[in-house]
Amino acid sequence: MAEKKEINEKSNAEELAELVKELPGDEEVLLDLNVTPEGDDKIPLDPETGLDPEKLESELNDLKDLVQGEIDKMMEENPDSTWKEIVKEAKDKKANRGKETVKFCECCGENIVDEDETYCEECLNTMRHYPFVWWKILIPIFAVITLVLAFSYFAISYPVFSETVAANKLADSGKLTSALAAYDNINAEIKVTDKNFGNRYLKYQVAIYEKLGVDAYEDLSKFIDQNFKGSDLKKFYNKSVLNAKNKISSFENLYSVFEEVYNGSKNYSEFSDAYDKKVEGTDYDPAQIYYYKYYAANVYGEGISVLRENVEKIKEVDPDAKSLYLPLFAEIALNEQKYDDMLKYAEELSKVNSESPYVYLYKAVSHRFQGDFDTASKVCDDGLKIDGTNTLLNYQKAVICLLQDKQSEAYSYACTAYEYADTVNSYLSAASLYSLCAQLEGDTEVNEAIVEEVSDYGYGFANEVQEILDGKLTVKELFTEGKGDFTWQ
Image (cartoon, rainbow, N blue to C red; front, side, top):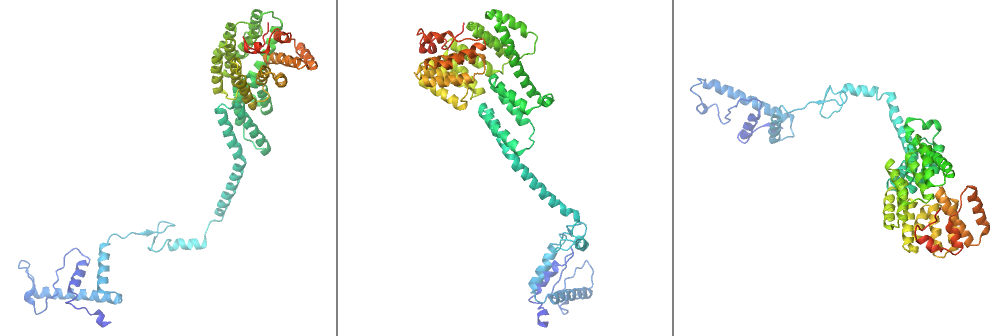
């Protein structure tokens, strides 16, 4: 151990000088370790200082002893360290002097702690006695309960929300019939879950029904009565539903006005004058007023100019009523034998409702007039896949079957068209066709029932029915030439 502490001045002179250089202080220390007491003449003196050489030598020896003492002390404190390691440690301490950081307790943030500690002693004692506040344990429990309830409600509600989005996408793409079918599934699911999802999804359906137009009024009326109470309709947020209800009432009331005036008029001129007086100053829907005038002009056999005038008025008072006036424009094009215009109006209508029966109707009629009965039949089949009970498409299919000499099939489709007729015009046409098919098939009993029912309503059959039965007119001439359909004088 003694040997280890002994430092060879010659071999460690350079290291000692290095250590002295690393000692604290800003002043440079000049130390010549090779100077001995006998080597006074080797001590450099500055004549200008006037220092005593002996005194300077004594101070240097004291400094030497001090340094040696510190070295001995460091060697004793670190017996397993080499001299180079001690020198390096001293050098590192000097380099890091002033760079030391203070670490604070992570709990209180005020008390200083050792580098290897996280919390101060005061906080540690508090944690031991009060590890947590009792009520805080309820927080994670409530969080878990809330999470479970949220997931439960989400699991129940998600199908309704996702299916509503899908139904609205169908409506936006013009597939209105498919959208309503999707909503029927949603309505059934909501009824089973017995959850309150508000009425916004109901108002979406009302809007779809309105786009379908007058042909969907009966279904829309039932839907509103089932889902909106009378008092609910008066609330401001159901204004759109109330407007839809008022349009339906207007259409129904105008039909009563039409019947009354029609039964008391001999011609369209008389009808028009009396009808205008009846509706003047009323709150009937303007577009519907002109619709019944158009219908009357059609029944009375007025010219195309009168028909077009009324349809133009419908478009003028309500440009958004495309489901109402586009089919009427197509009928006028049919009367003018402008089959390309029919296809144009059918294409415009498909942008509003690609599943509208009128889209398939006018395409089928266009192909029928051009003699392509097979294509016309296929178009009808495509439309009937969407709505197999549609009176217009069943009527058109029956006509095409007659042209193809398929009388039994024509009789079946004519029966469906007659049973599901929902307007006066479609009813009269379907009744005439059904009566014709029944007589061609020799079914006198059915024909007599049709005649009786039509007579009870105060109507009659188209003259072309008897002309065909008498051999004065052929089916092909009736349905491929001129107007291509029954007429009423």
